[in-house]
Each structure stands twice: as structure tokens, then as C-alpha cells.
Image 1: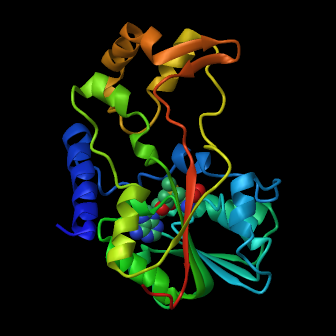
Image 2: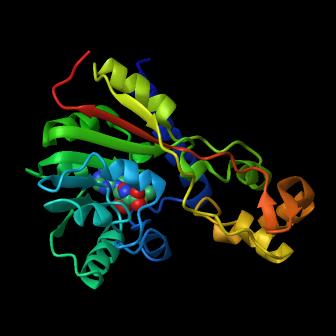
Length: 280
Ligand SMILES: C[S@@+](CC[C@H](N)C(=O)[O-])C[C@H]1O[C@@H](n2cnc3c(N)ncnc32)[C@H](O)[C@@H]1O
């Protein structure tokens, strides 16, 4: 099996398990509503340490393409630092938040192409960027080939060290009695790039995860915290809450700042980047 076939098989296994738990909801926009709002940030905020590094690759004269740019968490701050920003995202819900956020921030050089990247026509840029998207892409080789073909100077992919939809895996096991199928992570993408002959640089970015920073203050809030995310079928919530309660002292450490989840790994963001035209 090639690295690309293994990558696709992991994505297939994740979605097959999801259908087993949730039924087939593939017609829905899974990124809409509260999820899209959770990805919305003030574009004029001070850059965090990871965004500082990402922005350092962008020049004021650049056209930047943000593939799966969501609500513009990264793309809109970049729009303030480049000539033009094009967000190509498949989700109407994310697109709505992106456009509203750009308008509220008075950003006029950011545009939305609402489309899967694989189907987007004639979108090119000096820098083609994609953050937190590759875990979900089954056919990773054509996706990456298109990133490379669309870029005039550089491709940039950022991923977290564990795929975020798997961050509740230990709780998933408690509720569903089996391991949650993992989506591919950077450890699965790098061999694919190697097979493609792409000599990518890999940089560990300095800052930690932007989500889940506020610790729950009470025991009921901690149980609620453990059950966050789209992995849990709503009908299973009462028995999931019981399972978390039964394992509470193993799952949380009581600290002065609140209840600290013990199953959370040390999330690090990785930047995988290459200049176009480079080949092994
Ligand atoms: C986890 S969110 C990341 C959003 C944004 N890049 C960020 O880092 O805040 C994943 C986004 O990728 C988009 N997406 C997933 N697969 C895509 C594809 N094949 N083409 C375009 N967008 C895609 C989803 O619609 C969603 O907005």
C-alpha cells in the first residue's frame, strides 16, 4: 500500500465509523452554525506566535489563496498584510461567517469562492495556504498537486500534531466501546509528499492550541466539556455523561485554575511548506 492509499483508507475508515454512529448526514453542512462561529476571530487582533510565523512568509504584494479558509481565522489577518486574499471553501456556513467578519472589519481585499478546492476553477496566487483541512481530504495527491499548481511561489499547509476531530478519542472509547478511527495527521502526510517528490520543510510552530484554553470551573461544566464536539450522537449524551462521571477522577485533575482534562495531549501546530518547482 502506498502512503497515499493508506492516507485515503484512514479517511474512509473515519467516515465509515461516523456513519455507523450518526447515520448518513452527508447532505448537511457540518461546518455551519456554532462550529463556523467558533472559527471566527477578530481579524485585527494582535497576531499570536503561530500566526506571526505564517504571516512572515507573506509579502504585501502577494495574492494569497486560503484553501478551506473557513471563517477567515487565518486568512483575514493575512488579508491585512497582502494585496488580495481568496478563500476557497466548500461550506456555505463558514463562507457566511467569513464574509460577515470581513465586512465588519472593513476588509475589502478578501473574496470568497464557495467551492471544494478540487472543483475550483482558475484560482491562483503567489502563496497557496491551507490550515486544518488536509485531515479531511481523501484523495490527497490531486489535492496537493492542485495546491502546487495554483501557487506561483510557495505552498503552506498547517496541521495540528493530532487531528482535532480525534481529540476526544479516550472519551469516545468510554461511550462507544471501541477506538475512534484516527484521521490522518502530519505523520501520514509527510510520506505522501515524499512519494510525490516534494521536498517540504517542516516547522513546529511555537504556540499551543487556540481552543479549550479556559478550564471548566465546576464538575457539571467539566462533564459538559468532556462531551463537546461532533463525535457524540446527541441521543447518547445521557449515558455518555454517566460514563464521564464514573471515570471523573481519572479524566480530570482538580487544579486552582479549574478541572484540567488529563486526556489532552500537548497540541503543537506544524507548518509544512515548500517553494514551487522544487522536487526531490
Ligand atoms: C477545521 S476548518 C479550518 C478552517 C480554517 N482554515 C482555520 O484554520 O480556521 C476546515 C475547513 O475546511 C473546509 N474544507 C474541507 N474540505 C475542503 C475542500 N476539499 N475544499 C474546500 N474546503 C474544504 C471546510 O468547509 C472547513 O471550513
